[in-house]
Each structure stands twice: as C-alpha cells, then as structure tokens.
Image (cartoon, rainbow, N blue to C red; front, side):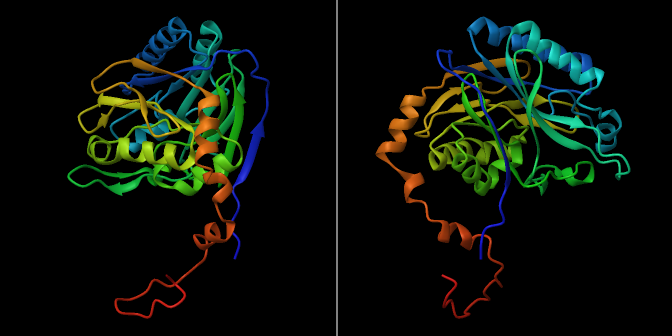
Length: 313
C-alpha cells in the first residue's frame, strides 16, 4: 500500500549573492499582547544588528494565557491589526520573520477552536507561506501538567510546506511535530535545507527530549534545524524549557540560548556547501527506500505477546 501523501507547496526565489546568517529567538510570552510585541521587537533589533536575514520566533509568541478559553477569545485573523504589527516589524528591520504559532481565528461556522499557524513573512512584511500545525500536543506530561491542545486548536491538514528564503530552502513545522519524523522526511524530499521548529516545550519534556529530538531530526534529514523557543515562567501554571537551538546537518549544536526569562538570540551561518558535503559522504536520500517508507502507512493489527511475527517483523 502507498503512503498517504502530504500535500506540498514549494515557493521559489533566487538567493545568489545573499548572506545566509539566520537568528533563532527565545522569549517569555505572557497574556500581554503589548508586552509580547515589545519582546519580539527587541529580538528583531538584535537580529538586525547581528546582520541576520531571517529571524525565527517561537510558538505562541503573541499570547500565552492561563486557560484555553483565553486563547480562543483573543485569536484574530492574519490580516488583522495584531498580526499587522508583526508585519511592520519585518518591514522596519528589513528581516524575514518565521512567526511560529500564531493563534489564528477559526473558520466561520466552526466550533470556536483556533488554528496554530506558522507564518513566514518577507522583509516587506508580506506573507510568503503559512502552515497550520499538524500534530497537536494532547499529553499528560510525566511529573508535569496535562495539556490538551485539541481543546482549543484545530489540527492542520497534512501538508509539507517548503519555500525559498535568503538563507536557503525552508521547511515548516511547529513544536510537537518534532516527534513525527515522517513530516521531516516529506520536507527534505521536497528540497528542504533548513527546517524550522518554533516551539514552546514544557520544562519536563524539554529536559528529557529537546536536544535529543532536534539533533536526531537534523541527522536524519541532513539539514540545518532552527528551533526558536519559549523560556521561563509565563504564568502561575506554565513554564517553558528554553534553549532555542541551531543544529547543523551533522547533528552538531551551533547555538544554544540556554534558559531564563526574556528575549535573546543565537545565530547560525547556513553553509549549504557543508550540507551538500555531508549528504555526498553519507547519501541517505539516495539510499532511502519507498517500499520501506510505505510500511509505516499500512494498517496492521498489533501483535499480542507470543503471537507469530511472520510477515510483521
């Protein structure tokens, strides 16, 4: 049986002669729209001063509240006044922005839930691409909170979104998508060179898995992986891990923003020649087998203990 395909979007541009410096941001969002905008403005100033062409902003950059009903109530459209303020930041700082995880108001006639939308803006503040988070965080965190993102968020369709940017061809994901490598495989097969993972990892899951998963996805895809992160104490109920990360195609950590509240960045030179060298010396893409990929999409009955494993190994 064939794998159910991701719908994909590819948007092209020329990147000849451009600097490929990317900045990866970290912040501590709260329920204050104005306060969060000020933090992102600070990140933009830092990135522009460093000479970056792209700045990655974390999931839930515009709002983190204490209850999911607050999230639903404050959601707005991408052409609204709130998001327009972030478009103005892209223009005023001459930066491409990865705005990873905006609470976009749901469809008319829906159940009130929002879309968790990752938007790419060019340096004129124009939307180049958007991606609605596919995999939602419905998890009872060990020794931590119970979080049910599906209570207030509609899962996005299966899409593998890639687009050209001044730092290379980007592949879009959001946070919990990180645990589903099939999406990352779909992105790299469509030409992704830099995969973006804007996130708001909990402190517990971050300590256990954040570096491990990001480095694994970079090694598997042989791409740069840039993961903007929420960090610190958002409110009395929620705290995030931090460690905004830039990882190279060999799995090496290029930059780590550490922990703590407030805005900070790390930068990464996106060396596509180095990426091609890694791929040439270990040609994973050429060795990948479609027949093996298809196994993951087959519907199978899980084996019971002691059952015959014939044909299901």
